[in-house]
Length: 381
Image 1 (cartoon, rainbow, N blue to C red):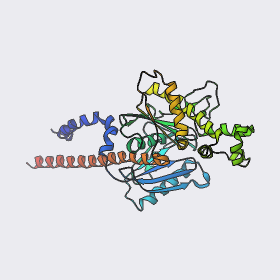
Image 2: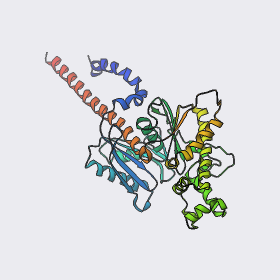
Image 3: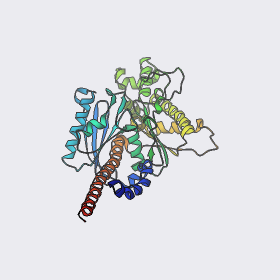
Image 4: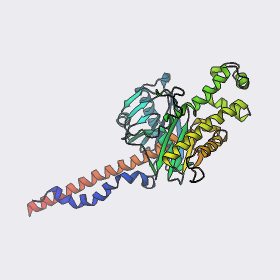
């Protein structure tokens, strides 16, 4: 007797080649994903930024919310995300939500394994939000989402092998190869900031000593400036006067501003940070051999005051220098909104899979109806 499985076997055999190519979908899916608006979320330690983004990377509307009472609890942040998405959904036809989180996200892009600035430990963020929102949800590391945005719409367009380095409080990073984000076996690839470049060096919050981000990041920049100011160094008189003796008020953007105005100490500090940046980039080039390094994050606002010294140090420390092509080093173009734009664009791939899954359910139901009708016709014959 024929069975439903027998009747549908030809369809299953036709689907086999498609299943074998599932690993390459992300590489080409940005070309075939539905051109629908999606929401991107960028989560920081004390704020959540949300925006509706179209298929060309344009931000249609953007909202920002401080987490209540500066709370870092998972429930409060989740409530804030839901409120922002529902608010945007009142004015836009939202098809999916993408979230860029500053932390380690598992390979399934469901759980935030660890977020240093939030109280998230093995938090099933995607499942929790999917249960509260009526659209598919994608979660990824914020450096991955920023790198995706720069590759799709910014400084990395046209590059087949790209490494993104985000310089902020610390250093984050991401790897894109042939249009795919390389997340590693466990989803936590790209933590470049914790490469140890000075054995026994400055203590890092990660628990180790001498991590790269202790020498080339916003924290490193401010630490060096404060140490010189606290020592009442003559070279620090400009910044001491600027903060009226309140050394604790020194910030990274302030140092960049004074450097642009010609303050010699601030220029020198950015050069030091840039030289360490170039050393780390040379190490990454030896390991990964990309065609392009994109430098983003808040510290990159210093532009050539930082990236110029980085390029010089990169040339001096590159393995095989003079006998190999050199990767291009460029500043990111999308600024602080890159993570939000990238998260929204990656979410569009989830919307595509969501639609395909619904279509398959309809197709299975139609095949079953044809099978049932065939059985009824045979029984009445």
